[in-house]
Length: 380
Ligand code: CAA
Image 1 (cartoon, rainbow, N blue to C red):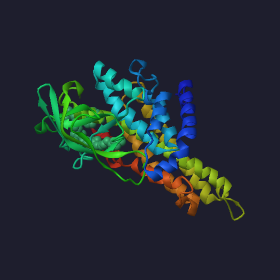
Image 2 (cartoon, helix red, strand yellow; image 1 turned 30 degrees about the horizontal axis):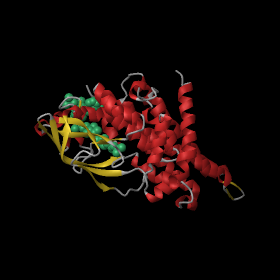
Image 3 (cartoon, rainbow, N blue to C red; image 1 turned 45 degrees about the vertical axis):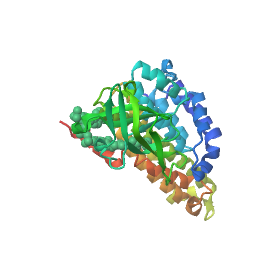
Image 4 (cartoon, protein in one colour; image 1 turned 60 degrees about the vertical axis):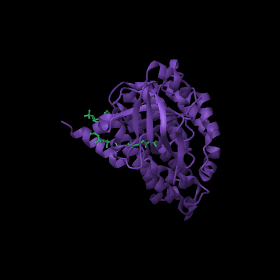
């Protein structure tokens, strides 16, 4: 067993860390305060090759592995969780299903510009009435000649409004329940495709979260991903990898909060010595660091399995569950280490605490992760 990163993975970590420090961190607090998405950051990620990390060069990517991908999301989230999820949703929720299930034409038409950072991706599964119960969706896609007509709406869409390419799920045959669900690639600008309400959120406030609306959107069958009826499996398999991206986001948030806490505990003096030298704070920091490290190991393991072509659904649910819960615990403790200052916007730890919460909710709540893990362990 070898826990050492490869030269390529180390190089990607260094590149993303430098980029995050120089280009993302300086405006992170301001973008959070203003709920402002900055497309220029996405464009810069495209120039660095981050928007196509795991895809082969023939599709505009840089041909790195999934460990490199989670390292990139972690390093971005260490300074700005909104930027971390922008990349994670673009790559694993939109790029992955096109790469895995798309035809050669679809990969050249949609995946290539996404990998090159010229277009941004998003994923539409959740509806007002179907969150955890994803199979209960109401959006329909009715066949009309060589096209499908989409009607309905999707909510809580990460990258919504900003994205150019949306992988969406709709019922082609509602009687068949989840077996009647089909996946489509919908492009911004298609007639009848519009953006609804923008959410005002507790955290990841510089990542846009929107409702998307389909009002008789005519989608050519060339934009259907997979066969009719494959949609639910495509949605679930996409989330298997997406969940590990969220685990990586959680690791980055928790690491950022830990870094800030360690620095503060060394500088801040009370009762004549640094607060880190008081056992109450020292023990907190030790526990925080242990949770971060355990979360990272689970996340890298799931990514490594995916890169090796091994099954990774259970590991990905475990990494998301553990890293998400840990990020919440670690960031709450970080605010505690900072005391009254931690409760103010003078330090980043309150932002980390607000951002951590979503990692326990999206891409399947952590209750759903427990359900997924239990199902896999107890089947047959
Ligand atoms: N891979 C392949 N197939 C899978 C699968 C997987 N991971 N999970 C389920 N399936 C298949 C099953 O094998 C089954 O197939 P058959 O009918 O052929 O036997 C079929 O799908 C139905 O499976 P279930 O009976 O287990 O389905 P269910 O209706 O009970 O739901 C669930 C299972 C795990 C609860 C699922 O609905 C789920 O994951 N819910 C959470 C949804 C979710 O994560 N939403 C996140 C939205 S996206 C988001 O948050 C993005 C963002 O903003 C960043």
